[in-house]
Length: 139
Image (cartoon, rainbow, N blue to C red):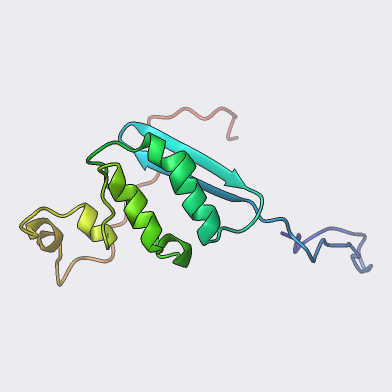
């Protein structure tokens, strides 16, 4: 990003060049599990369906275990039928919505936390750290 503020002598105009034009796009993909972060993948371009299917086939599938649940965002390259087939071929499953991965079989979990009149403003809290000693003299 280009800087929006700068300094110069009083009464003079600040003239600075800013980069613009062709930015390099780097895409990072990975999976977060209870076992930790797995299957990291970096490419020097934007992601497309072919790149994502290659990632699933070569990087993610060897790391998945039977019973794992895969949750992805709504990117169009994630929606190919081949992706679902590959993930389900190793015994993992792909939920259709993120909430489906975390709800119970009865659905009670997803509705129990909704409150129609929940508080939106928390009470003001004392932010001073009275038990801390400053590292510099205040006077």
